[in-house]
Image (cartoon, rainbow, N blue to C red; front, side, top):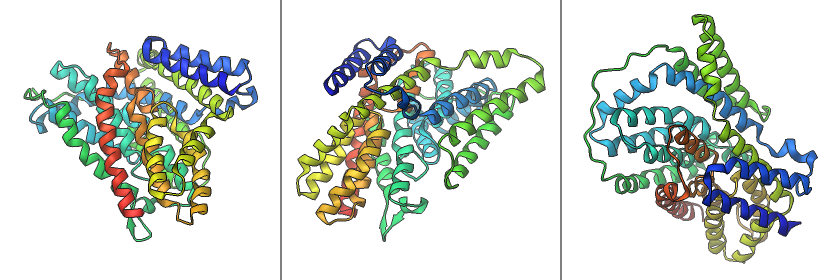
Length: 422
């Protein structure tokens, strides 16, 4: 059964790479086969699907559609164009802007909020938006590891290791994960200058766009504040963030109808929901649940630890770079959940504190998703947004940006964590 599950899993990814147009169907089909073949028991289906992520994306899509229609992204694009000398610096600024937001709220929500601004800039300049939107996605994934509330994996680590919000900044008299991530982010600026250095066209804004409605912008700010506030409340339900986004999206639609008495806006918003992205994520959640149930995730984790032996440096290196490789293709949430208890046992046997390996795991597993367009939910969302705009993004297109960005950020974080925490 394990071999069957692994072969089917590999086949699914081969098809996704070679025939990306039908990715949701490959994922849903593989998940269905897993259920029929009982690789994943039907009773486990509700628990393997990350309803929080699906609800959060759905609610944010509704809110963001009203945000786009209000013309606020166009105004933000005008302001950004005034501040940047050329297209290269517009792209870098958008990437850093997304990263700063993503340090405090979910990566997917960040992409859904910032990408429309990037698209508005690209339309105004009449340039291809693929590079800018991919940069926004990978920067969002990077900065998600900076704080306790920036990413699901950070929340998982904080809960497991009993870490609070400030421990990501300073812990046991040493600088924490925040500084490893921020140094990595700074190191990516020269990389982006090389990647986008040829885009030296000057930019300017001819006048300022008039915003039609400030309610969607206000609701987005409320959403950010609510997501941050919810992260400090203990023992909240797993779907708290998703519920916040959905409720605010629905409230925005109700307010719009109450003010204008038109159903066209609500109908337009529902039609613009990216169901392909939602179905792809749904299928991937089932598939990952299947290979986790089959023991494949555990086998990967054990193999990484086995190769490390008794050398802490070798073990740390394998944890970081092995996590990068695995997270490029596997959702990092079940992987991190599997690895945390494994690392606890290993460090107990070695007689060392687990913090070094915990931070190394978070660094590799969070940033590794940036290698491929299917390695993280934020990447899938960004590629889906580009597809809606008529830009089909394949693996090579994404990896031209994702690979150098990831390798640079991970190397800086890898060295910083080792020298500070070893």
